[in-house]
Image 1 (cartoon, rainbow, N blue to C red):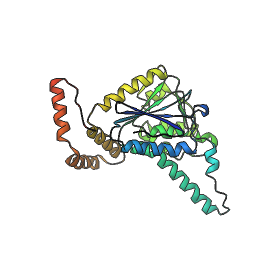
Image 2: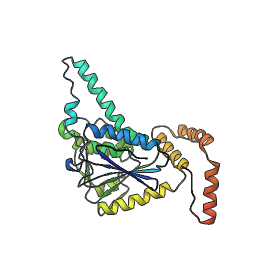
Image 3: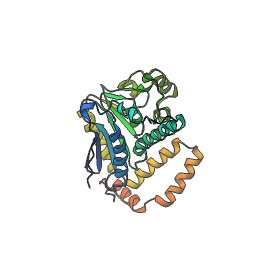
Image 4: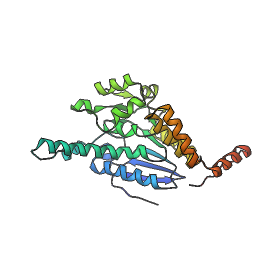
Length: 270
């Protein structure tokens, strides 16, 4: 059970996978290979039965400085036909969206552990996580506006579902930095930690507590939360009734009840 990547470092311990962006000399800027490998990695983790939670972090001094500007050059088609050039650009954007959406689609919870820099494409990426944690020195910026473009790989679609709409608009229109404490106050960040070492220790503990639960129950919870975000209450209620009709585990229920009664740790199958 191992995978190697050019731009990511992946470890798995006690049912928790840690995916670390691994271009520390480039502030973990997202180059072409990293975009593709993020999708490959999270699709692999989605299929790996032993993985019950994922931590998304960054190696080096920065979490992620956003998209490597070289990716913009790669997206430009030399075709003289504007329509074909536009179609090529659109396909590139859709591919990049899919690269990051793989994080959101991963069946297990993804916990983003963010330190120092988180700008541009990194905000798009962390919006795909289930929860976000940060160090005191972390800051966030929708930096696309400063280079004359509209953010197009997920921030403007997901962020207003996470934080107040007016705050999301202000960040999008101004490109200003939002520090860790403000990010916590508006609900983007769950908790703020003094430094990266403390953050990684505490986030790992949270991930392991998730990994101790029934994988089917956690999977169902994530499915319902994502579905409910984009559907009405009535549609969500109907879906959970149908889901549990097929996915409710009597075995896990019995183990959970026994563990509660005996104050023991329940052990669930992958």
